[in-house]
Image (cartoon, rainbow, N blue to C red):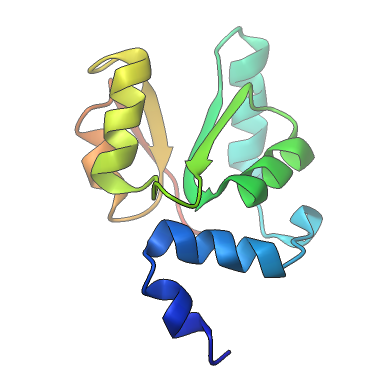
Length: 126
């Protein structure tokens, strides 16, 4: 616990990577919004490409993606780049263009991403 503040000195992305180095996440134990997962799966069945774009570390995001089994791609923090807020929006716009993607989110930082999205889809934290 005492090393956590020192890890954070290297930045959020490095901090997340260090935590991922030391934690074995069991994705099946996380609380999922089952209605959202069902909706995402219908979207994928309808031919839409689904990307899990998250500020979580790549290893954690990949394990969640593998467990949920509905995403075509994972874009996440990588130990150097913290994939959140304006950075996340820039990455999505570089790949899909301004207003070239729909974005599902649930946090205040998602407002920055929704500003560049074609559609903002708001879900509850519950």
